[in-house]
Amino acid sequence: MPELPEVEGYRRLAERALGREITGVDVHDPRCLAAGTTPKALRARLVGTRLVAARRRGKLLVLDGCRGAVGLRFGMTGILVVDGRRGVDRLLYAGAEDTGAEDAGAEDTGAAATNARGPRGAGRWSRLVIRFADGEYLALKDQRIFGRVVLDPDEEALGPDALGLTRAQLDQVLATRPPRPGPALKARLLDQAKVAGLGNLVTDEVLFQAGLSPLRPCGSLTKAEADRLASALASTLLDLVHRGGSHLGEMTGQRHPGGTCPRDGTAMERTMVNGRSTWWCPAHQV
DNA sequence: TAGATTGTTACCGT
DNA sequence: CACGGTAACAATCT
Image (cartoon, rainbow, N blue to C red; front, side, top):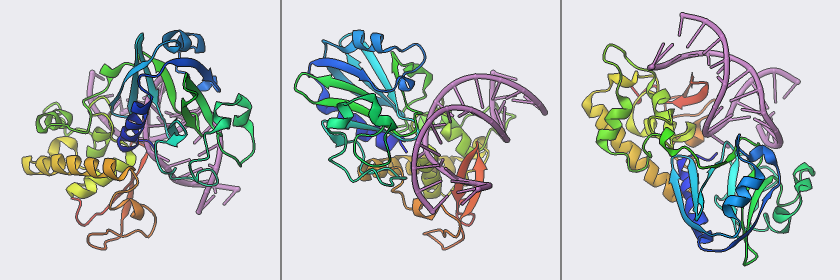
């Protein structure tokens, strides 16, 4: 679920936690720690200090502490909780859990045993909790454990952030070695080293808005098409951040068998790109 | 039940 | 080196 729009929501939520004294770090499930990151090192980095900034680069949330940075990657199902407030309204595959506020309360700060419990109740899937002196906390919840917490994340491995990408930067994203047609447009946009923040749903929505096929070789766009992509990228990201979810685009509700294009009624087509399920309108995305 | 799911990484092949 | 395909990770839902 977390693509750029969700993580931007998490970032804003995390700003609530800035400046408070950190009194403890509870690792409920060590599988959420990146290789080389230990509970001990996390505590040494954070306990007794305060967070001074919450930044985002693509889908990476960076919490800057007085002694250095802690990075949070949210994988497919990661959610940030601060003071009992969730960073998003709901999970796409919500199911029983998420009616909201009551979750993440006492149980989130509780024992790791909550992870193994049955299908009901709040505070499941709490993997990491940063506790503050005021009794509140910041927690990473993650149903599947694809999310990771990492000390000193390598931000430079990521391309420029998709939100605010300039027209010149987009040309760099689309650039190929001249004789090469380049990979599929969607594959290139999903490449976090080229541009950071675009995931499967957002990319499909952006291409839908731009009227471009996900299968176009990324080096084949005319200047006018690249212009269209740049403007669709900017407007779609702003819109999704504002709405607060990658799944809240114009065409997201039609990514299923039998779905039709909201623009022209054409049957939506499904293709695989980079192993990702890709839905697009063959009539107006060319 | 088989197949699907918003992300990242590793590996193998061309 | 660039790129595609696949699997793995884990849990859940249709």
